[in-house]
Image (cartoon, rainbow, N blue to C red; front, side):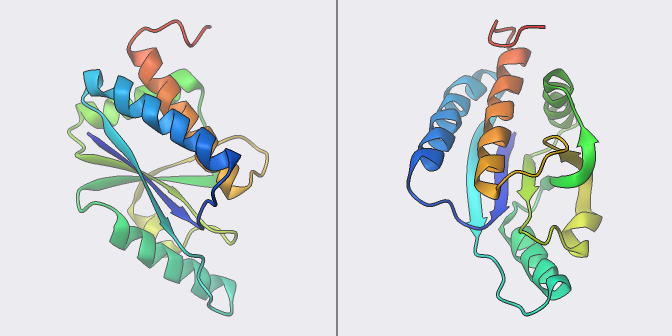
Length: 160
């Protein structure tokens, strides 16, 4: 199964991008045994529309255009469900077991997600009750994907 991270805004060079790249590289290496590929980070620029509803709609359309045609969309949203790392691991595994060709995680812009992508999402999750900068959300997500792989592989990286 292919993994995609669809995100509004672009990471600049620096420690955040380096940390993201470190976890993405770990995923690329350790995910092979589970037939997981990626993650591909696909970033779009924030919309320049004048009002929030129009910006969200514009960004929603752009994110969906970038997603693979067979993508099952999971939104990262402040109103999403909290998952433990084990539950997140099971979510990825269940999508793969169900035959998903691509699992795409969508990180919206400052205004959130538009209705078009929200209506196509199979699930909404969140990275906790706190608000995170979008650059940090990418890092937290990619780390949790790596952790999910290690949990599935039975690696002692995760301890309960």
